[in-house]
Amino acid sequence: MSPRAQTLAPTGTLRVAFLGTNPVHGRVDPKSGAVTGPIADIVQEVARRLGVPFRLLPAPDPAGVIAHVRNGTADLGAIAYDTDRAREVDFAGSFAVMFSSYLVPAGSPIRTLADADQPGVAIGAGRTQTQGIFLATHLRQARLRTFDALPPPAEIQRLLLAGELQAFGLNRQRADDAASASAGALRVVPGSFVDVEQSFVVAKGDQARAAEIARLVDELRASGFIAAAIARAQLVGAAPPPPRPVTP
Image (cartoon, rainbow, N blue to C red; front, side, top):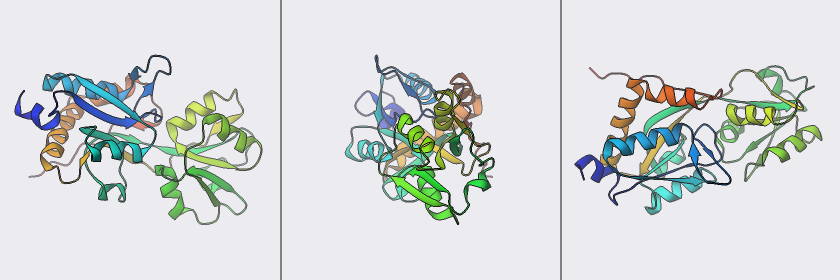
C-alpha cells in the first residue's frame, strides 16, 4: 500500500462510519443495505485513489459514529461539528453544509422561523441532534421538548397533528422527506435556523490521518466532485462547503 493508504486504511480496507438515518450523509436501502448519496460517492472515490476497498458502517446517531472511531472499528467517521463532540474526536475534511428547519402541520400559523419562538409554542427535537443542541441554548420564548432518540417520521407526524407539539426541529432534508411523505398533512418552514458543516472525524490526536483526509476532501471539493455528489443525491437540505481559506 502507498503511505497515504497505510495512514487512512491500515487494515487494507477503508472503513467509514456515518449517520445511517441522515439523508445528507446517505440513504440505506432497507432491503439490500446498499448506501447511496454523498458519503457513498465520496468514500468510494477516496478508496479508489488509495487503491483499497471500502466499507460503509451506518450508525444510528452521532454517539454511534464516535464509538466506531474511538474503538477502532472505523478509520473515519462522519458527523456534524459540535464543541462537545470535538472533545472526543478530531474534525477534518468538511464535505457538506447541512441546513435546519421546522416541520409543522400544513395549517399551522407558523410561517417563518421567528414565528416558532413564541410563548405557548412547544418545539420538539432530538436531544443529541444538531438541531436539539442549538435550540436548547437559542430559544427564548418557546418550550423545547427533547427526545433521547429521534422519533421516526410517523411519530413526529402524530405529535404534530395531535397538537402535542407545534413544530419539530430537524435537518432540512429530513423535514422535507417527512413533508413529502405526509400526503399534504405537513410542511417545512422556509429558511434555516442553523447551518452546520458535516465533516469527517478521526480518533483524538491522530494528526496524520486528519491531515490526509483533509487533503483528499480539499481536492474533491476543488474539483467539483463534492458539489456533483450533492446534486446527484437531489438534496434540498444541504450545499457544498465553502472553499477553505488559502494560507499565504
